[in-house]
Image (cartoon, rainbow, N blue to C red; front, side, top):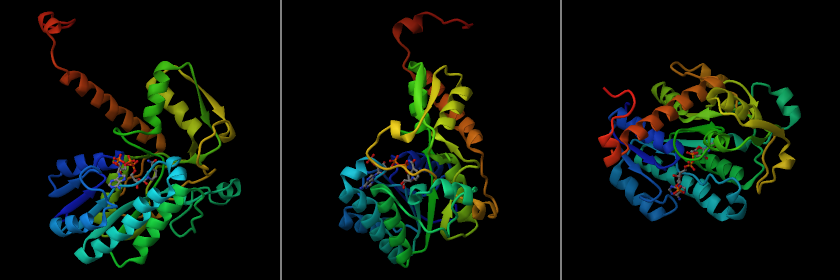
Length: 314
Ligand SMILES: NC(=O)c1ccc[n+]([C@@H]2O[C@H](COP(=O)([O-])OP(=O)(O)OC[C@H]3O[C@@H](n4cnc5c(N)ncnc54)[C@H](OP(=O)(O)O)[C@@H]3O)[C@@H](O)[C@H]2O)c1
């Protein structure tokens, strides 16, 4: 990576955790902050830390991501996703650092007509129409960055899934192991994105010297129901997946019908690699299997098991 000093924020989230491992693997000089280390809404401390670290690249994975919680805590959502991001952009400009910031497909609230009109998704030039508090706060954050003078990469992604943290894949794996049937909504259309793939493509944009607003997701458009069916198929878990309309799964925040992000611009950039949503799922499941195996392997050896060689021992 061609940067002298990287600053990573939100290093404990799903994307932040994978960024942290990536930077470590690449032996990048990085100052890494979890939410416990640095609250980005603490303006004075944020300024002090940026001043001390003197980064030339800031990767912001910190966000208020509770879509339903944001309806009850709109001020907090705006403080984190809008005000703090605007402040971070000013600090990045002062420090001469490039700011990489993540935003969401939920800035769009597409209809059935949109799905027909834009079958490959909304492109970066399409005007957003956020329809819940979280989406409004994220769109406001995007505008704050674009209104500042900092050099930036704003990357919208969707249905994010990684090996750490909470996401749909992990929920399905948990429920699939204990339930015979799982009801999953079949009238919200979008595309899953895998943290590893988001990082690979963010790196490709950085390597190509790109700036501005970009979309990173996977190939293909599906519903949560389609996703759940494929998770069960690829894992061999036996739970039946029952399609239901959104109206039968009441949640606090409004969920848009169609939010597919077009990745046409990204595909033209040298070095990008876009996976299909099912291929990305295979990669993620492999990663989870390896992580589970390592966790098993790392378990402390107990007195009983140490004394009795297991099957297959020489
Ligand atoms: N998850 C998705 O499906 C999805 C979809 C589209 C776009 N995105 C965007 O992608 C980015 C990464 O999402 P993610 O799924 O990795 O989110 P995540 O797992 O919820 O991680 C967000 C991180 O930000 C931290 N954070 C929250 N408030 C903070 C504050 N005031 N100061 C410092 N850190 C704070 C959280 O810490 P605590 O846990 O301690 O609060 C958490 O570690 C976000 O910008 C999100 O909006 C996500």
